[in-house]
Amino acid sequence: MGFQKIDYGTWPRRPYFEHYHRDVPCWYSMTADVDITALLLRLRESGLRFYPAIIYGIARMVNADPALRTAMDETGTIGIYDQVDPTYTVFHKDDETFSVLWTAYQPDLAGFCRAWEADRARYGDIHAFEARPPEAGRGLFNISAVPWTSFRSLHLELPEANDYLLPIFTLGRYREENGRTLLPLAVQVHHGVTDGFHVGRFFSRLQAWADGAAEAGT
Image 1 (cartoon, rainbow, N blue to C red):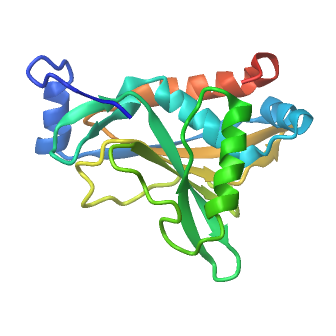
Image 2: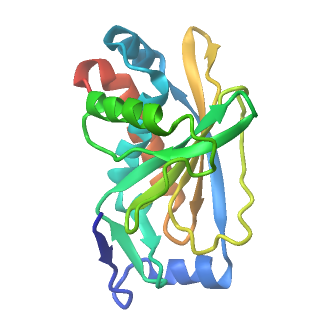
């Protein structure tokens, strides 16, 4: 994936980045419910599984916003990936561990789900932390799942991760409320590159995609 370096001298976010990265290192988290009622109906009709579909939806909204694709390379240079791909966890029931896989993002939902199924079949039974190791130069962001618990909030402790700028997502167990199906989704972001505005826009876009999936087909 391409990595476009930022002109640090003219970067509008420079004072914000320096404050939240150098002066007051700051991550923050936000948890919101995503109404997936219409999305689940569409997926049942199409035969697509929910887990790869919601991974696709999150990846689509992350790729729609340069703020959520901003990262540091191995030299400490700040830039924006042309595309970032989702990593995700798979659980091993036999020893109660998990592995991390990744699937390359593509803008077609069905195509992504087919690629996810292929990656899951190839790597999913490998008992290793990184069952599919990352490729050099590829931008990857993290999605994990806690399908056993429908939480109201979630926070990660990242004391040594100040240079990690990409968002981290955690899915909870969805639940029924007042005839709707709600999915708790937590996101952890670095305040140096991502403000509440960007997180709010992400959730708005994801909800619009979930609501319009039946019409858009994507």
